[in-house]
Image (cartoon, rainbow, N blue to C red; front, side):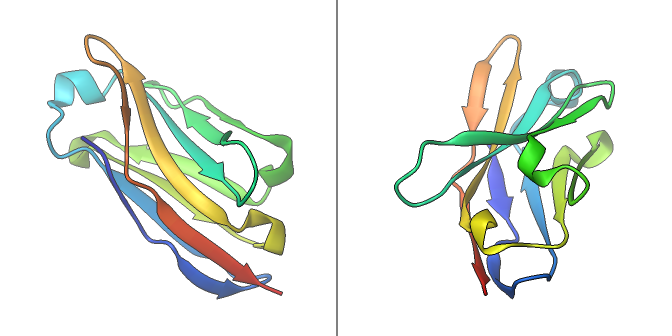
Amino acid sequence: QLQASGGGLVQAGGSLRLSCVAPRMITSTFNPSIMNWYRQAPGKQREVVATITGVGRTNYTDSVKDRFTISRDNSRKRIYLQMNGLKSSDTAVYYCNAVGRPYGEYWGQGTLVTVSS
């Protein structure tokens, strides 16, 4: 239900923008959904990085505050994660996630971000 893209290899200090689209979700279901970006680094548990509610409220894990920005475009059923000032510790597979009714929860397939120091 979710398709993530935009990962790649970037040098430390660089930027990437991740995108996630929900092509099969109808707008009336997508719009109120809480959308999240998670990441999972090698050998570590998956963690939530950023959240955006249906009305645009955002929340970030402390390690990415002031560097990452989550946003959404409801008309295109997309969310984005703008990542600036990337660090080697940001290297991970990034997943988009949707939570809402009536479906419960959807996950995307993940996109790899590698930050070289």
